[in-house]
Amino acid sequence: MVRLAQWIMSGRLNALAAAALLGLLTPLAWTSVSVVALVTLRRSVIDAFWPLAGALIVALAVHWNSGDVSQVGAVLAGLAGAMVLASSRSLAMALVTVSLVASLYMALLLQWLPERFDELASLLVPFFDELKQANPELPLAQVNPRQIVVEGMGLVTALSAQAALLLARWLQARLYNPGGFRTEFHSLRIARPATMALVFAMLVTQWFSAATVLLPMLVLPLVFAGLGLVHGLVGLRAGNRTPLVFFYLTLVLLAGPAFMVLIAAAIMDSFIDFRKRIGTARP
Image 1 (tube, rainbow, N blue to C red):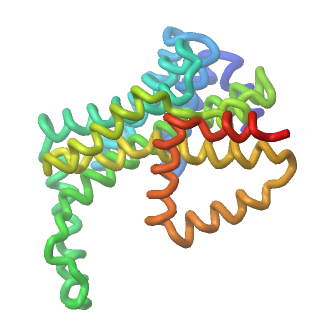
Image 2: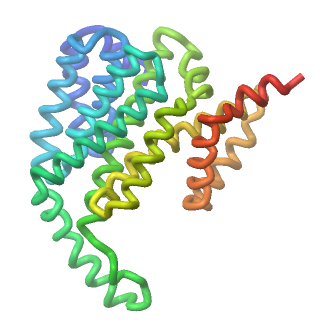
């Protein structure tokens, strides 16, 4: 991956080709956003025009036409996050920006192109009908296929862009600042105003049913901040990674409750700063 990043950074046409080709690989299409973000972080938005053009052309010509609207949103949100990260040097603010841009993107699509989601939802209706008939005891009566599609697309949009941004930052550190990403991720902490804004927006989605679909995107920055908190606390004990193994096993086995605790910890960390308190308390 590092060698590929070196090749990408060696020329504009290389970056353009990499963004376009990676965008064609459906399971790895999100990595094309990393190319755009990497060039933006290391050079400038102007230089990122070439990989941006390649990523957007493929996203529109291939993914959009096949019904997947998430790739276009991921490219735009990833670019916005990279611009914020390049100017502010704040990974937390960049992740929040990605979620906000992804949420705005989905809100605009719901307003202007609702038929895109209706078409995809209609494909799920037969599946849920068969599932209800085969398992009448399951509480599927209130399941809304359209809401599942919208929330799923929104989550994929924001998650793809944030994962791509983190990958780009890691590659940038490997190429030009070894060890820099580890330090940055271990100290990842969302500022109080941003946390309060996210929490308020999450509450708004509960008050207005039409905004519920935005909730998965708004939660993601807190999830990554929680992961950064765990890695940062474990990192205080150099060389001992065993707690991380048990932590990720818990996330897999107890996904729902574990993620709720992770999000709550990230919110509390914005006000308490656990790493600073624990670090200063150590002898």
